[in-house]
Length: 89
Image (cartoon, rainbow, N blue to C red; front, side):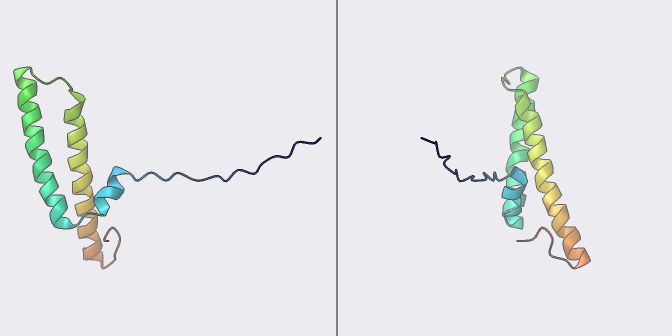
């Protein structure tokens, strides 16, 4: 009695990065989200100054998210300037 090995299907899990999610958004949505995040960053800094902020890592996460969005906007502006379609959906 020989055991037969079952062939397993290997499914590759592709996770969508934050930058990929941002690239799917249109320009006005990104700009509006940046405004919301800047307001949130202001509130977090205010809470930090008062001593009420529990999760101090949230400030860094918010800053990085704003930077990602600005990077995508810059990529799109450069693509338009160069005549390509990189970064535009």
